Length: 271
Image (cartoon, rainbow, N blue to C red; front, side, top):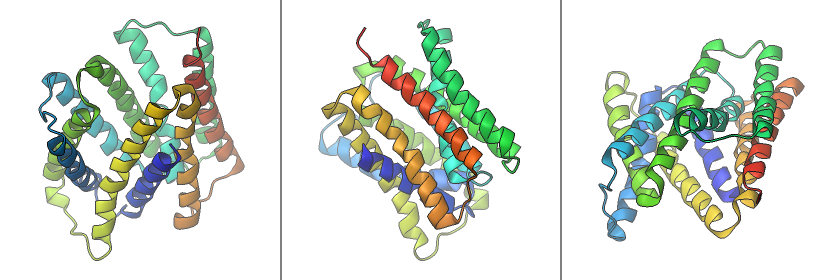
């Protein structure tokens, strides 16, 4: 899980570095380079690429690319550590959607944990007046769509191979990102080619090692470690991009992560 979160943090740092490119072009490079890995895996292992639940797989791709695009857009207006922290509000929205759409029940204590996390958002914005309202709006909508991703994946269930699900996402994102970036295309130069390929490479290995972590360890033991991505990304933001985080900003981020980790560990406790 540590390797996974570090991989995702590296991907986030590359996104921030490519801030001069439009979000759709970053989506294209992120998806196309990852698609090379997913297609190779499926073909090598003779796994049907089209899957079975086509409509849900397409919906997962559309919802996912919307969330990813808005996240990439938000990094142009927010410190990368703040954007990643707020994107992790997705489980809150997933929980709400699960109650409304899937008729699942949520314990009162889980709402308390979500309240702790959301209070972190209030602290972040309430005391950091430099945060862009537009950037916050983008990342919140991104988190909402990311929450929907959880619901769609739950509807898909175990009937599809995980790489098939990811592959649909990458195909749709490649098409959407490629088409919508044509008019504002900026050709990468020099080392930027390594960076745009690194988007998919780090993203793919982040997914792979996260999956392996959940396969070999108990969820309640390993799930909280996924929030190390925020810590790694914060460190990259400070060291690579000279971002400055006030004490209250860090306190707000801590509240967000604390609330979400408490929720994850509570859900996995045997009852």
